[in-house]
Amino acid sequence: MTVGTPIRVEGGGTSPSTRAVSVGPRRRRRIRWTSAWLFMAPSLLILGVFVIYPIVVSFWYSLHDWTIGSDVQPFLGLGNYLALTRDPQFWNALVNTLELTVVSVAALVVLGLALAIALLRDSFITKAVRSAFFFPTVVSLTSIGLVWRFLLDPQLGLVAGISETLGLPAVDWLQSTALALPAVIFVDIWKNLGFVMIIMIGGLKGVPAERYEAGRLDGAGDWQLVRFITLPSIRPTLLFATLILTIQSLQLFDLVYVMTGGGPLFATDTLVTEVFREGFVNYRTGYASAISWVLFALIMLISLVQLRIFRYDDVD
Image 1 (tube, rainbow, N blue to C red):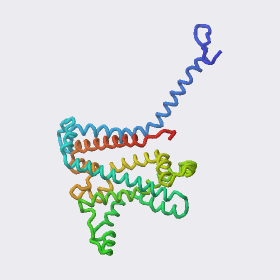
Image 2 (image 1 turned 90 degrees about the vertical axis):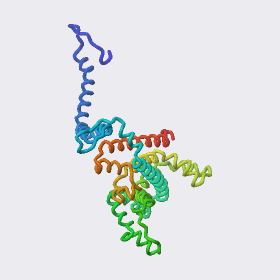
Image 3 (image 1 turned 135 degrees about the vertical axis):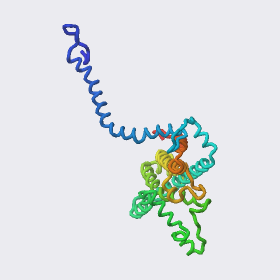
Image 4 (image 1 turned 180 degrees about the vertical axis):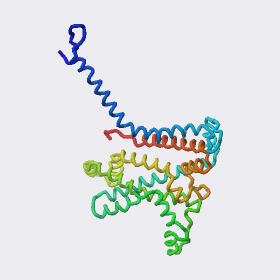
């Protein structure tokens, strides 16, 4: 007789012990699920109030001509999104955002990997150099922006002082329409380089040494080892670093706002600074919400492309 087989008793029912065997597991599953929901309830409540609800409301705003202080908020449908296609400031901010993202992410991945390879061995000197590169990562973007704004000041900054010592003319980096965005990109790279380096070092340390030994036995040089062994082996690390850096660059606000405020003449304006300006300066909440949803769609699209490019299997 197997466990759970009904046992006929007088009265046409089943044995009480059998009912306990058949009902008990379902009851225990219900108890486990109830306990899990009770433990998750505070986090789910906070997530719903401060994340999910604002997301839904922002999409609702994007469908209206929603202006703070106005008595009437007419429904526009896709009107705000169509208006974006005719807005030169939006296209300027989009181009600046993409330029900042492409240049900074590419430079950070290449330089971070090069530094990781150079500083891979553990020694007192390499640990000290790693710490020096990683230190800016723990400092807030606002503080970094203020420091570099002072350093690049054409009258009081350290960069202007060095240029004067070398007999070069002082350059107003942050007030030049041609140099302001490169200056912001440089500071962004300088701040995040140590972070990328540490991630790459972690990925490199996970590559089995036997692969390099086999490659050298086959006559592979240093570049061939990097190309055919290192890069394929750290593909998950490259994916993680690229995704994080891309999302961070597309959403960059603090550094731009503190250093340039989006100027001069919107030369460093990004999608996030335009969202801030339209929503909190011009009080066009509906229009700002539409820009934020375009940014969300852009992040999703680029992330999917990166997942496709860096896809890997467990056998890789």
